[in-house]
Image 1 (cartoon, each protein chain N blue to C red):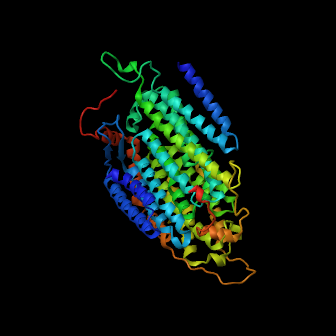
Image 2: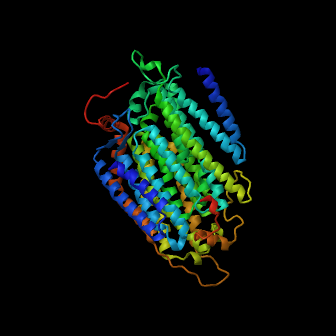
Image 3: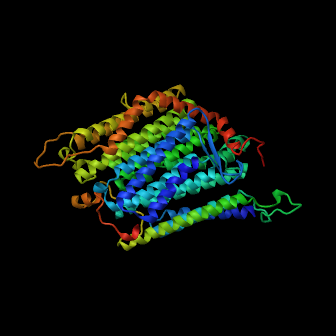
Length: 494
Length: 134
């Protein structure tokens, strides 16, 4: 089952890439695959929600020697999120609006991307995680080039360079860890590293944290991201904003047991998170290009997640997971709104937008729900996300962080109002004319419904996140499941 | 052996970072390659610089030979970094074919100098493209 989740999108992507069917067939196949993925991911969530861990060891090698895929509650939550976002992106990519060529290029590449992401969420092996990161990155470089303009080339280059360096640091940290312990299996590492020399351990883990922090785009490692997302073909930006930074967040969550061996690193994460939250939102507030504004917002929101993660304890990790889920949905829907606004107004610049072109009604409603959820107004998902982060900060008695996050929250609301003021609000209009304001909610409507559902079922989802967090900190079930992947028996140790 | 390797790692990393500071894409690509190789040496060092290849015959201890697993890691990393370097160079070629210089420059903010017609073409997926960059 775990193998299907990983291999199905890869093979489907390969098929679409080589066969190059016409655009309708391609879209149907892509939607079908994402449907299957959503169902299997939901099944996986249901299987693992009781604390069971699904494991699959490859090639007859017993972990920690062989590579194993392992899905616990944390992994399956992210996999379900990715499957949902993939389906929504495919729905949002429409021939009439985005052109045939964009769709034909985007379908196989997005499937490759998904395969890499799901592999990354599943793998229990640090080196395998590196390979999955690269699979994700290479697909993302190609996706960035889809518009084929000079602008998209300029946007893709910083991503390639920065991520290459981050991957190199990841690899260096991994090499040091292997040198210390002789293992790259995550379950094994968490046991072996306890007795490792603390200084060397700190260097190795710091390299990993910097690498994952770059992928998650936290200040001061974030500046490649706002440069690139605005150049993507529009609905793909929704997919990227929703999930790409979350791979970094997921990796940090996965190695949290290792990070927490070194209190200095957790401290660094807390302050990097707090700084991201504030710097990101201030940068966002000064932008007039809608998608750039939203990208800076991602930096800010990831700051909340990383700060919660740094606080540790089940409360902090649960808050990080819940906030990550909420932020993916909300940010994706805001990017879809941005796509509509840009196409209707034929500009990227908020100042040139016109409320008559934008139209009101459903689009405004969708934007309103997403924006208020991002700002954290009850009863939307953002309120519960922020509440859980604030609670974690309060329990950890980290009042400075709490203050930073509260101020950032206020500016978030301000920047959403800025979009509203320029794009939706009525202004004195000098010229008259007929405007086409028909809007079919489609994918965006679906996403906004998901936000509302997450808001109203915040209780159960938070309980799930809390269970996942406790399990992640305890780690005994995960270790046991991974080591017994090939049946009961003594575990060979080097 | 180890001090020599440490020096090599240091030199490659330094050269790589220096080259990375340039705007020219060619130099950046070379810099990335240097950084990649410096990290490969770190990986290899994780598996001891033994005198013998990792083929264990009778009467030998496992600690007498180098550890083969980091070598496999390094091999994978070399392949990946080669692919990325190639991709970066291909991008540089496309860039210069379009009359631009192969340099790292930021994408223009807001609309840049695009007209609203060309923007609406681009948003509907009918913007100008270059077939050589697919």
